[in-house]
Length: 406
Ligand SMILES: *Cc1c(COP(=O)(O)O)cnc(C)c1O
Image (tube, rainbow, N blue to C red):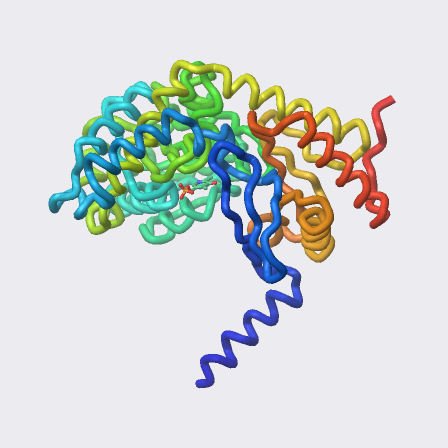
């Protein structure tokens, strides 16, 4: 086989479809977020980032940086091993204690990323619980889907955020079988929030284990940043809460929070946990500082919500079509892969505004979009520039505007 020709053909197909991924080469400037240097073949420019998942700017917070500097100097660079073989650092244990407390659970277990935590926890639970059946929300993240698929357990997809459909599917399974229900709180691409209480009612009715991904909510919602489940007083009804340290907490890593036995079970059986080098201690210390800060400080969350509302108001006022939702994610709908990429390129080139186009397979064909994530570190001036630039390109390309409210 001509391997190179094969790779080339596959890549050409992506390019023809407008789905080929190009990465913006950035150098984020600590202390100056959302500003970053942008490296291109033509040189280096400055851009304002409007699509970061460092939602609160915690990646440049002095407390986080200080903790990381201190720990780097005191513990060195890497963890030095897997958790089992010399890699469990004091800072991992402190962080797990902090996470268990954040979610009001007996225990927490750290992973190298949110992706790995979903993959490892779901695949281990579904493969080890004897004859387990999985019920998965239709819009679950790739990391959950991969984990469930890897388990080879029987899997049913329920309609997105539809407790009645979940109830219907659960009713068809023998009552005695172990059942695992996996869903999210804030869905990252549409920014909608699942009906957690109603899903938990159904789980409890059928004796199913509940597993929630709060990756886009931890740090951002709830009085201590415990997520939507904290805000709604539901944490104690959920069996497994999964989160990331890489988004609102601004660092890196993933985790689950659950009962002592469940965490110990995953710790003991999950290959994605056992056979991988532990996070660097400095990363753990930085994440710990970030969580601690956000447990008591409301300023970042308040300012975040205020910025989001402001951007939404401004876009609504000029009829730029956004998907309405109750979260901090603002999807500006374009509906065409080529146009979406073209708008993104134009914003970058002419205005130094960086918003990555989101195309298939991340979102369905025909719903291509710009996913805008305002943060507390975006100024009024930044918002003016974004809104004016979008208005200009919308007129230039004769894109449809939403009927403006009277
Ligand atoms: C980003 C994401 C993850 C993975 O978390 P990482 O820490 O980035 O690996 C898991 N679930 C959802 C819904 C995500 O958007």
